[in-house]
Amino acid sequence: MERGKGMYLQIKEPTKRISADSVRVWRISNLLGYGITLVLAGAVLYAAYYYDWKTWIAAILTIGFMLLLAAAIWAVGIKPYYLQKTWRYEIDEQFAQLKYGRFKVRHIVIPMAKVEYVSTSQGPFLRKYGLFNVEIGTTTSDHTIPAIHRDEAYALREQISTYAKVKLDGENGVEEA
Image (cartoon, rainbow, N blue to C red):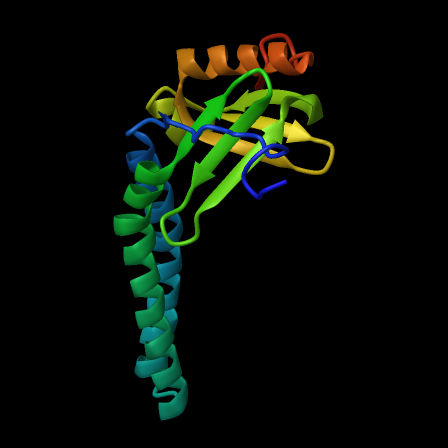
């Protein structure tokens, strides 16, 4: 058989997008984490100059602080935007598909026959914007569709559980974090 014909399934690309509010949630979360880290790193850097530590130690700390600052700018200012723009998912009777990434594109196809559980979860930042993460679990791994609005997340959870013939976690399928 020729490659691309016959035995290979033709799976259409995922088209559904995650919420635009995910950018705000990821920015707040990353800002909190990097903010605390930058304050602590700044305090150590200040101590290096205040207590006149060896020059090479202060130089290494300064370079480390600058790299940390660059990583914070990437994680808070740029990455959340690109993640939201590239995240796609699609659910049908045969497969759950997740596709994301700008530089390293990942396209995950999960057969519904392999799905063992599906659940929704929500942390404090997601709760502020009325968003949920939908987690799809198989025997060997779990996959998350992030930042879906409440009604859509519940409908998605119900749809996946019906297609995969699984029981929901708990009474309402929500895991408390």
